[in-house]
Length: 138
Image (cartoon, rainbow, N blue to C red; front, side, top):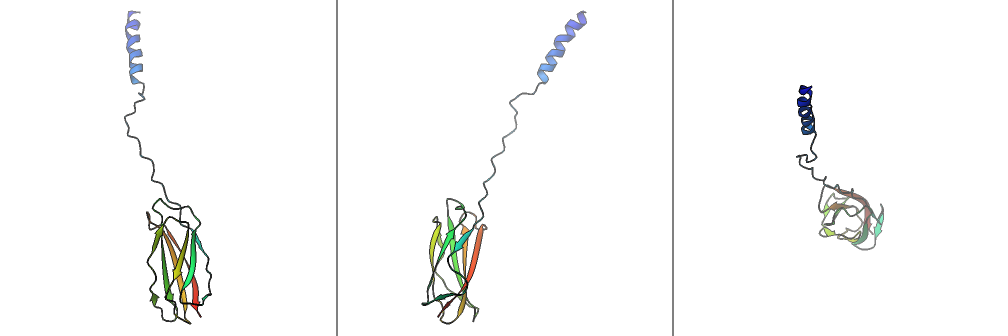
């Protein structure tokens, strides 16, 4: 009987000391980096657009959420389909507005051209989308 009285406190003490502490000791994992919504936009130009001058106005409207507080960059390129020459355009536009008025310039008369509008996230340039259309200066 004396053995049980001596062993019982040792067993109870061992069980209490083996219980898991809530302190943990592991380092918390940082929250995941947010992923940007893929760029999506519309333009108000269609294939076979006709211009009466050597310029052509087009509006690019972001239809996705703004990718970051840094905004978007919009680039325009123009390719002469007759000569395969790239025609210089204005510098890229950077901003946080959803709707952006753009102006194609230097359209050659009587040459069909392919205009490409590319919208990219400033924070993540690989998050981009582009659309193209044809235009002619009559």
